[in-house]
Length: 113
Length: 113
Image 1 (tube, rainbow over the protein chains, first blue to last red):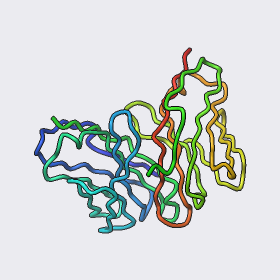
Image 2 (image 1 turned 45 degrees about the horizontal axis):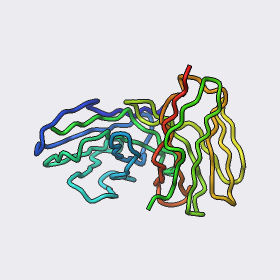
Image 3 (image 1 turned 180 degrees about the horizontal axis):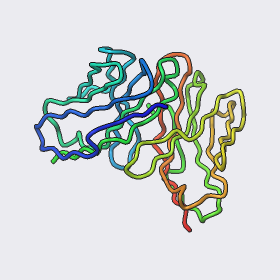
């Protein structure tokens, strides 16, 4: 069966510091991968998605970036965090031919102070 | 532009009641409609999904009703339990195409013992 991991689970970072969040998927090959952000008490905002290694599509212009160095690894980064980057970051995967059926990871709670 | 709209924003019911969450969509090309359940501090979990060729789908105590002409679909939680207290997100997508889900903003459901 497929499993999705995210780490760290929680993170507190000062404004202006860098960020690296990691997501890995097990039990599947060539998945579609997604990064979402969920602000407190609000909905899900798609940030990036990837259909393959090195292929990243950005949905929202911001100071975040994403990379996919390996088939089942997806990384969310920032060079300098802003207060507004605080939120709950969720990684999701789908099979390559069923992008409409997405499965979420446990999330990373990021607080920028 | 909000492609999927949910109502009500929050709902409180007694144990055994039937909370009903409604969603409306705009894009008639959508042909896959999932519901996700999210507990506090956790990632959303795919709960149940429906395609427009049927008007109703049941999985355990969860039922989706679909009205294609009205472009609306609803989640019913039969015999609700306190453990069903969560945030519920509806979404919509096209099975052929862009690998993205359009999410509603979410509804908080509280089931009182």
